[in-house]
Amino acid sequence: MTSPFVEVVSRSSLRERVDQLGAEISTDLKGEVPVMVGVLQGSVVFLADLVRSMTIDLEVEFLSLTRFGHDGQIGIAMDIADPLEDRHVVIVEDIVDTGLTLASMRRLLEVRNPASIRTVTLIDKAPRRIVEVDLEYRGFEVGDEFLLGYGLDWKGHYRHISSLWAVMDLEVLQENRLAFAQHLGIAP
Ligand code: 5GP
Image (tube, rainbow, N blue to C red; front, side, top):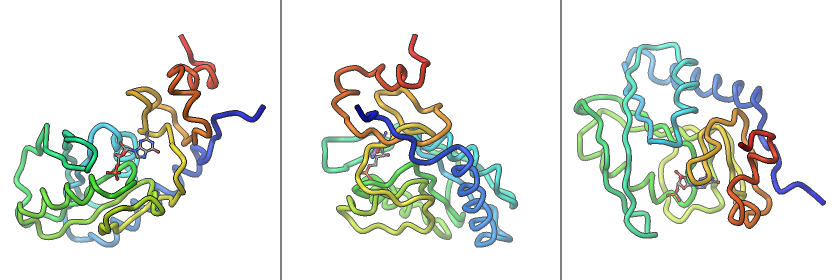
């Protein structure tokens, strides 16, 4: 039987690509002090690696979102402490799927009059996009497989797994959320 879990991006490939993104953003924003805005909780692992590969001064802030229903409507559950007026903002996302979350978030931040807004996402699920949204930097482009690890979760679990995995059969996880932990040999 084939495994329902497949490693799709290794730890070393993640490190290499994140370093490239960090270098690219640092070049583009040379002379500025960007605010790197992490979207909780999915972006935490990526953001931690990304900012450490950057070579310019910067600040880190976090936002937490609430979702209403399935049409991507969002509100801010936990806001950024400082104003963004005249600042260069870089939204740090784990994954952009339909694009609804990112489109709403860009609108929420644009009204604060930042000097610029860019987005960096680790994963771009481009074929699943419903709304067009600007995406300046992407780590990897994927199809429509469900991914886990490196910040991405299943019911709050598996964010700490250091490589990226695709779930080939989601029913396995729906029936037993520990199935991936068992696969990795870390089940309690
Ligand atoms: P969007 O509004 O772009 O459709 O949704 C983005 C959100 O959907 C992400 O922040 C993430 O929470 C969730 N999501 C989309 N695809 C995946 C995936 O493959 N794995 C996980 N764990 N979450 C996903």
